[in-house]
Length: 156
Image (cartoon, rainbow, N blue to C red):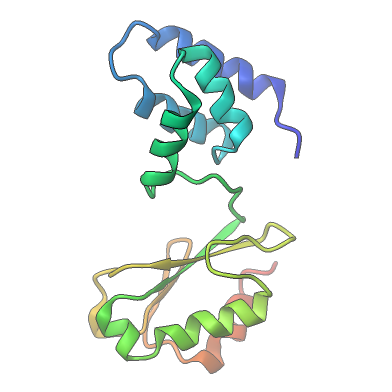
């Protein structure tokens, strides 16, 4: 996917507005992700060129913090809790079923850019284990047999 000139112009303008501020990397990365939706290498190189921060440093920050992503996300994000309570109650089976249903691995996005599958840590819903979240919708006590039915709601 070709990234647009308009987005790069917006990011350049933002960087210019904070160029003399100390510690601009985190806020610049947050702004870039807000603009582009993710931080591919092309965007990281642009930030490096504009800020004179080494690309290796930028990449290190992007890959360290889970708030940043280097891959484009799908329209819907599916998160399955792998915290202790959920894991014990079968969340790995849920992830396996979703991966099979969507033909995608954890951390990846479907070819049609509709779904991104993520493994999460405790969501604080231990009494509902195993828990699956799609966007803002929480599904508790999920049975792997219900996965296709749940996913079907988001295909439209």
